Image (cartoon, rainbow, N blue to C red; front, side):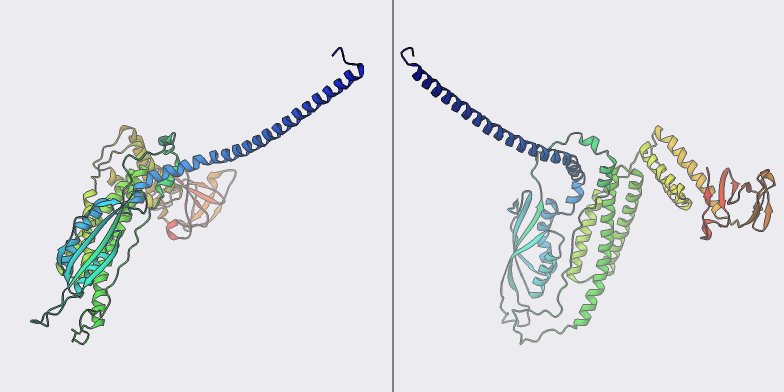
Length: 491
């Protein structure tokens, strides 16, 4: 550098400065691009964080829905047939053939396997071979279609029979092959479920318990395929003379017998609805109402069994398709009876407190007759049951409230027409009130037995004393039983 002239040194210096400045500008430009890129990433992350926060806020509600579904899952899935139901259906197919009047030829073993419809769905396939005339074949198909299972007829094949030359009047028998598929739901055993923190504690939440208790499961849809009137065998020569059946008489017979079956099925449907209520009360821990529902269910089951026995004795149902429905009903009732548990209940403080709370609510509304009815049911419920010591004080409160309601209800049955009064604000003892046409002062008795006394006289109401209760009656209003007014009680 020492050999360079001053001009050359200046040029070199300027060149180096230009290079350095360009490098710095390039670095600054790169930094600005990087900063902008980082800012864009930060903005995107902030948006994702905001979206994540919104989703996080939704998690408790979603978890509550999951907890609710897990609690009601058995009731929701009860509408579906179980694996045992399906096994019984395939086992009874031979009986269906016999009931329809067909001859059994082949009923191979049926095994459930995974279905391609969805996970947890199991399908059982079966191929039935039988021999029968047109009427028996139609009855058999009708019985299958009316069975309360998830069954589908996937194939139907019939080989027409030929008349017997030696006996032209003999019924023509046809070979029938029916392919069936039945379905049931069975999730994989040991399937892992996501853990929800504090699930047991959260199930005690009032809103969640209310959602579980008020849950109404799906009800199975059902229909009845009525046999057509005037069917004839399509495989028989139509020129043959057919037995003449009065269609109107056949229709009336079917409608009459079907009404018997419908009444029985409606009674069974009422029992199934009570069974759902029973499950809800058991889940909610309401043992008092649970015991009442169980008694009602047992009574209805006994009544239905007696009615079905009467139908069998009187032969009031003779049509095969309707008899098949009764057989299914008989089977369902048998399963319900086997699943019934004994009504052994220990009366705890919680059970008694629930009853006391309901009585207090009725007392506040002046529903004294309802309190008497519920109280009698409660005493029946207690009979023969073990009562926990901590529940004894609540039982005393219940009895006390029942006694008060009885007194107030008795007073409500009395008629006191308050027509006029004279109020002495300086000396209350000199105030006068006209009750049922008699002028009375404070301390005077109203009724002939001397049980009701005037306790206070005011411009708008009168307070009576009756069997330890101070009861207010507004002027111009009569007893609640008269339908013209409602007494007001005071404690």
